[in-house]
Length: 356
Image (spheres, rainbow, N blue to C red):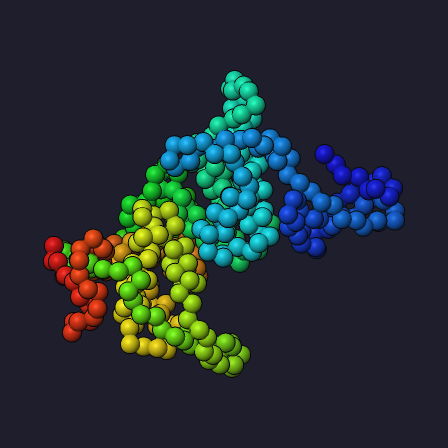
């Protein structure tokens, strides 16, 4: 539907120089009319799909029906995309996903679904988001830098909510990720593989006793300036376990027993730093990266994509590296009764190295 100028009735066009801004219930755009006076005005535009999705029921992972809520989808994207997109960009992805959902609802109506309530499988909602992210990753309207960010967001979302062949399954290992990348971005990823370098991988089993046993550092040292600008200053800030634990949980989004596994990862890392009241953020990040790599390859990829700013070919190479150079496995077995204090071998007491 064409939007006419409220002052003279002429046709209008969107001001391409001005960025649309997200509002709670729509998107604000600046427009110019095509008349002689060239009036300018703003519009608050709401996706036409909103009324179609009212009352939509979505099947949850537990097999129950829940009313579709846009806010829930927004929270899920904010958690899984790990700050790769701006708020405005995430707003646009949600709008595009809802447009895809609207098409699905219309298709069901054409196939004969009647009644006020329409039900969709939960994986179809994820597919709608996937299509929106992949479309944005290929859009010529975005700059090269932003298309890169959309590609990262697409991979992060797929790793958290889907698998090789769709959203009704999960990725099992790094080889699954490589196969999916080769299919989703065949012209971008590097396809040269190397055989694994190890015939067997050591396994360390840790038997933690208490869920909050690890001591925490008091301060962390981080950079507060720019290395390029010559202002590479260091500052000390209080260590926040809550903030650190949330970052780790975001890496494990979509994985089995995600919150529990993420918790034990933080405990292992903090035990490895026990006795240090002041730590550098770089040391904390490096140790966390090494630990997650030992625990879950998919969570590892979700952890390193934003912090290493990886593009598709680099993500593929990182996944290939997990296959070629696997880290020793770290398995948590909290049911065993063992004190998790450190011993002479720099392992929590109760840890056992098992050679397969």
